[in-house]
Image (cartoon, rainbow, N blue to C red):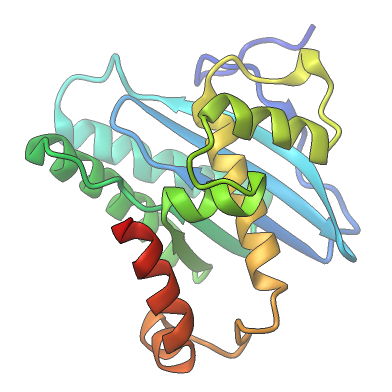
Length: 210
């Protein structure tokens, strides 16, 4: 049995393997637990490289947590060398303070990626679930089970914290979305994507209002 890593959860997979055309990292931001997952792409087939979590619950002080997030995301980027990163957007609830903390955590993770020159795309939780399971209202358990089926992950290798599978789902959703014909690979920014795909944005907005 592999030893448990410093994050408290045994990582699934190993260091990036040679032969992948692309490597996509997914991030599920959190203030106590932050999930991550990496996919290697060979042709049209995604393969699991690794998934796990960054434990933050025992770190005292909000700024120390942010520093830890920056360090670990930077370290993961160095180790696995992702070509692209997909990050889950914060869910806007009623607790303003919680949203502020989550937004900061997401922002620091984005900064760690952007500072290394890696492209990053943000996805709403609803769109990730829709892309992976076919239902925007899918539970975290259903998302995990679908990932297990699609990527052929053995039961004993599935993590007990669903933050890891949520992050892997973001990576898989990006793989699916980046292969769709409506999405221009030349889009270098969110503003460009908006200009090129106004009908797509309108459709997503309509779904979120329901």
